[in-house]
Image (cartoon, rainbow, N blue to C red; front, side, top):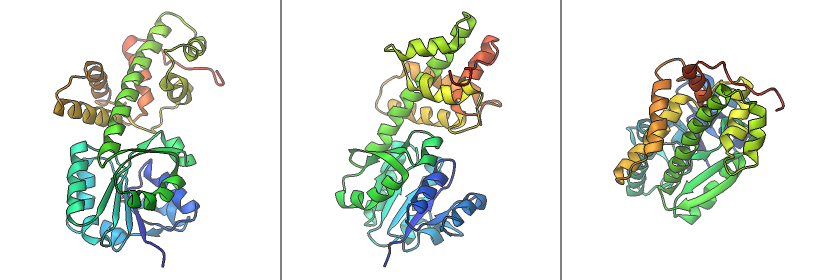
Length: 303
């Protein structure tokens, strides 16, 4: 008898991740509060559930990919939630980006019910999720549970890092995103300065690639999104603000300051107050250019 595996949360990252599991031969029961997010997976063989409880009931493995800490706690621990209906001894693998304290609470509650909790937040972008090239930061000390979920991770991505005990995955994700987003803001400011100074952006990109100042934001993320004129969201400014908020809250809890990150957080807070909130986070460049009175900064195609 095959295992029942449920996938709950089919947003910009969750839907393509679930699609890759299905395409690679594993059956899934799926649920999202937006029925339209489920429909494309029906054609790939998914069973569509009408509720969290229906999706998770009797499942051996439940994957959650949700927007924020309250959503994850409600779906897993709320009345009729995953923890109430999953098979005894089942595995709950949360792939969301949430507060570490939330992860700790959920993990403890699952353990108290005899369930195994794994945190496995996702690295890389929507385009990587679509290609099955995601990266996973896994927290959890139960080797048997890890081996049970590893084939699913392999279907969704190419790189798995076991970061340590439960909770270390989400903490790794927050630190990594803190660096990504802080560097993104510096990149936006640097490119705006370059435009003001009349520099050729393609030339600057080439120079940057050969120095220790090179970074993935300029060379890949900005180059393939905002510098190509595309600010449709892969990872929105609103979500970027949420992730930096989580990093700053985590820093506050361990009594350290992150002044550069706090400055980037403030910029994101301003940007999300208007039309930029739902744009891709690389639109930080357009926001910086707006403030500086600079025309949108773009690379010629192929540069």
